[in-house]
Length: 200
Length: 200
Image 1 (tube, rainbow over the protein chains, first blue to last red):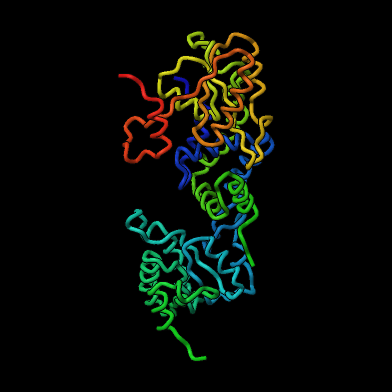
Image 2 (cartoon, each protein chain N blue to C red):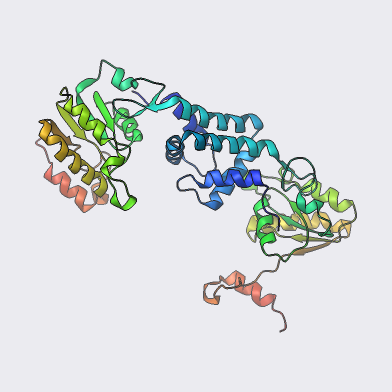
C-alpha cells in the first residue's frame, strides 16, 4: 500500500490540528497549498512565522498588539482610562471599535468560563483585570461578553469579583437588533427588549 | 478605529485564501496558530515549505511523489504495467490502494472536466494519459472518476479519445455499497445495481 509521501502527510497533519478542520478538509487544504506557486507557499509560511514572532499580548489589556509595549488603544491619550470594556475575544474589540461608539479602554479575557471545555477562571486573563481595577483609576467596567449562557455566567462571575472594589459594573443592553425584524426575534430577546424599554 | 495588527491581518488573509475558509474561520485559524508554542508554529510553517519543495508530480502517472523521479507505484515492478486506473485526484489513489484489490498502475487527472468551474480538458493531465496509451504497452484503462455528472462526462470523454488506440476501456461497477442498506439507496444506484446483477 502506497499512501501520500511523508512530507505531504506531515502537511495534512498540520492542517488537521486546526480547529474545525477534519482529516478530509486538511487534505484539501494541503493540496491547495501545494498547488500554489512556490513564492506564495513561501509567503504563507512566512506569514505564520512573522505573526507569531511579532504579535504579543498588550501587557495591560491583553489584546493582540505588534511588538513589545502597550497596544495602540492602551497607549492612546484620547481613550477614557476610567472605563474598561471586558470582552471574551480580540475580535470582539474589532466589532466594538467598528461601532465608533466607544471611547474607553478594553480588557480581553481570551475566552469565557466553560466547564464543558475545561476552561476555568484561571485559564482566562481575569487576574490581570482585577489588578487593573485594584489600581484604582477605573470607575466603570462594562461587561461585553456574548449574550450566551457561558458569556452571561462569565460576566456574572466577574461582576461578583469586581463589586468589592467599589467599581460600577454594567452590562451591554439587550434588545432587538437594529435593522432586524420583530417577527424573527426570539422570545427571550423580545422579553429583554420590553423589559429595557425607554421613554421616547 | 484600531483593528488587528498588520502581521495578524496578513496571517488572517493567508488563511482566508484557502478553499472553504471564510474571513471568520480564517480569524479563528490565525488565533489558534498564534496560541501555539513558538516551536509548533515554526513546525507548521516548515511543513508548508518542506511539502512544497519536496513534493512533485510523478512524470508518468502525475500522482504526488517525494523528490524527482517516478512515484513508488510507477517504480514498483510488482504492479501490472498493462493496466492503468484513471482517477480525478491523488486522494482517490489512496482510497483504491486501501481496498488492496488493485495491482495495476494509476493516472491522476487532477480534476474533472467542469465547464461551470472553467476546467477544460487542457487543464487536466489528459495529454500525458494519451501519450502513455500511445506508447503501446497498456491493454486496459479503468475509468475510476467519481460517479457524478462531471466524473461520468470526463470518463466518457476520455473513453472516446482512447478507443482509437485499440485499448480496452472499462468503468468501475455501479451498485449498492457494501454494508449499506437497500432502503437508503437512491433510485439511480438501485437501477444500476439491478442492471449489473450477476449470477451467484
